[in-house]
Structures are given as structure tokens and as C-alpha cells.
Length: 449
Image 1 (cartoon, one colour):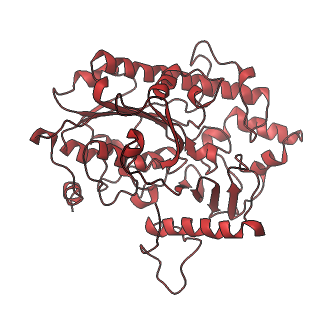
Image 2 (cartoon, one colour):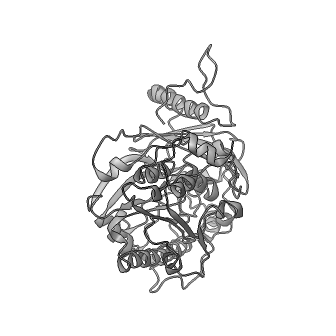
Image 3 (cartoon, helix red, strand yellow):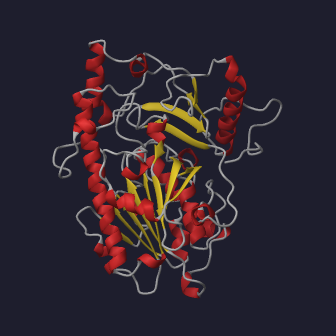
């Protein structure tokens, strides 16, 4: 079956050129290695992000957004397909999107959208050809808007490479002050770590200024009246125990939405949302039915504050091959997190860019001097538990594993069932932790994705 026939069978809407109400333009801004809450509007008083702060004040903050994977290309694949990476064979870093996998781009183009992408897409050269326009880092943003066909709606993807490593002085002026950094408890509070965090803040500020340029172009060209703009990060900050892990610093990212006259200014939601929900939302905004394969759910009514929206009970994340093999699955509700380490005999091994970072070297130096806290020393343990269970409300740093706590036995079983059900439903290649006795494993699990 061709990609076109797949989309047609899934109920894609007819092209905009055939008539009907004009759908909104959509702009998607995505940073590279950026954890919640590292924006000024999210409570980080040390960072300078005036443009994204304004976007939040004029739009909505979605404070509980989680990625499908704490790795770059696998998670980005879920944004394009609305499926978790293992469903689409994209769970390994740098795996190109298979040509046979449909994305949200095809139904948008059938609806009449002109599509474009700047900079980092990270789904392979073949996938880039699905866009009508692509622009490298040296191409000005205006180039896309200059090529817009008259009267057609557009989708624009802007993939920043900030705040990905490597870091150097001069990314932003004036630079952030290391003395003002808030050091999270899983990192040692050393001058080296503080300077590393200041560089991370510098690159976020540089990216924020480019987001401001996008908004300027929309206003200058009179396109801001019917344009939905969304901003998020592709995975967590490039620091140990964050990027590449299923702890919240690895999977909890910013999400902002702006749509003049459609989203109430200054609105905030703590509903759980996932990156698999993004493409379903964009298609819904364009008046296109959700393709049958997509696992996400539309956030359109949540954004507009109108109509029926059924909150998620849980979100799910996975990690597989990065530059080392570490298969992990996780489920998070508002109160609890369960992590399944399928290769617990391995110690924690940071991705190569983290292993080469000043912060990782500082962790080892502090360990040699006996100055790490017991919680920080967990990163250097020779192995890990198979199951980790956390009360993320009482223990937001995820330091106290409750998996063996008798008082949490019922929660442990419920979370295992949630995770196992999702693994069955989404065709995971790892064996799930639980199966139903005397019944075949399959799509009959009563699961709220």
C-alpha cells in the first residue's frame, strides 16, 4: 500500500484548493536538549528568554509535557508520526524515517498546505524531501515566507540546534552569570558545573532571540492573525542524569502555544500531554481526521478552552540505542513514575556528548574527593534496579525508589500494568513486565493511551 493510499484510507481531508474554510497556518519551534523549567516564564529567574516569555503571557503554558524518548531523532520521529518510536522502527538514534511510514505532512499537503523546514529535522535526507521548502542554518527565515504561494496556508518547522553541546564562550551577550545558576540536586554544586550551566543558559537565550525574529516576520507580513505557534524542546538538558534518561530532567520539556484570538492569554494547564499529541492537534486544527495509526490525542479543545477534552491519565517514554545500548521504558502519571530498566546489569552510561562534558568530569572529581551526596553517587553505581518507582509529587528529584515498599504495592502493580499494556498496544520489541493470565497478549488491553 502506498503512503497516499494509507492516508486516504485513514480519512485525510480533501485539498484546501477544493474549497472550505481557510485553516490556520502552523509554526512549530523546537529547541535541542532543553528541559523544563528552563525558561523565564517557567520559573527560572536566572535565564533571559523575553520572547518565549511573551509568547507564554499571550498564549498558553502546558506545564506537564513529556517526550516520547529522551533522545533526539527517536523523539522527533514521534512528532512527525504521532507514534512512539518503536512502532515506526525509529527507536535508535540517527535512524532515518522509513519511506513507508506516513507523517502528518502528507495530509496537510493534501489539504493545501505549503510546508517548510529550517535547520534540524533529523529524520534523514529522504524525509527532508517531503517538505516543499528546506533551509539550512545559513538561510534566513524570510526565504520561506518569500516562497509562500498566495492564498495557501502553511506549516513551518524550525529546528534550532541550541542548546545542544558543544559549548563555548560568546553564544550570547551579556553572558549568564555562573553565580546565579540554580544547580539541581542531582548535580554537584561546583564552579565547573555552574559555568557549564551558564553556557547552557546562553544558548537558550540565543535561541529565544531567533524565536523573536519568527514572531517579527509573522507580524510584519500580516500573518499573525490566523497562525498557531507552538514551542517545545526535543528532549532534556544535555547534562548527566537528564538527556538520555527517563527521569523527569530527561523527558519533561517546555511546551507553549500561541494563537491570537483562539488561545486565552496567560492560560496555564497542568494536564499531562505528550509529543505524540502534537501532530494529531495540528491535523485537528486543519480540519483533518486523525489517521488510524496515530497514537496521540488532539489538544485542540484544551488549547481553545472549549469543547470536550479528556485528560490523559499517563504518558510514556522509551530509550534504546544512543551511542550505547540502554533499553528503558517509563510510564508517568500526575503522581507516580515507573521506570523499567531492561538491561540493569549496565551502570549508568551518559551519551558521548555528556561523557565529554565538564559536568561529568566534575562529578568524577567530586567522587574522588568524597564530596558527592548519596543521591549523586547513584550515577556511579555498578548496576541499576530492574524497576524504579517514584512518588514524583513527594520526591520530584526521583531519589527514593519505592519499588520494594509494601505500602506502595498496589501502585506498583497498577503502574506495571499501565506500562505493560502500552507496550502490548504499541508493538514494543521488548517483553513487557506483565501479561494477562490465560489470555493472549495483544491489542485487547483496556488501556487509556
